[in-house]
Image (cartoon, rainbow, N blue to C red; front, side, top):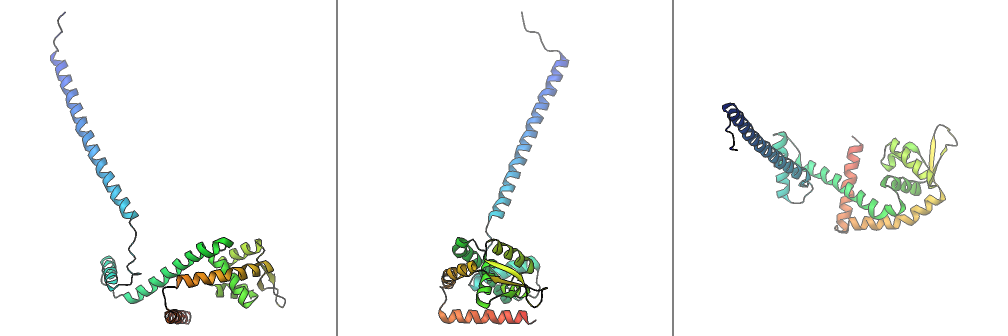
Length: 223
């Protein structure tokens, strides 16, 4: 039996279906192109986030500091800025964090102590029992941080709090015998860590650095 011929209506319907399919194909291509573009954009953003921040203010060359100045001025405009002060403070901040992280990982981790806990124990070991407010100031921590540190030290039997004999409103903190044993055992290793992080300096440079930092501390605390 011979195949029947399509009617005009069927031809028009087929044409519409073909046009829709072609249009759908073009739309799919556009979506694919947009998705590919979005993918490339996301990859570029990801690469930007993954890129390490240049440590130009912490660098030691004049060229790097000039680049840092250019970047900062490009961001905030031509405001009067003290770039030497910015570089000095940036390096102090970075050095303090690098040293703290190194000491916690390489020295204090074996005793499961934080930098703050070690500092509190060191102050009590050298200068004896302290009022909590004086201890917080000498250790360079807030009262809230000190409270958390003391809870941990007391739980481990390293330190204890007690009421002041003459004034019950005051709280004194002292090391327990176990705490004394820990700090006496730990401090030589801590000092070796200090020697390691300052090994690139000569003895006169170490003394000069200590003197300059004391000068900054006095200046800020007296203001």
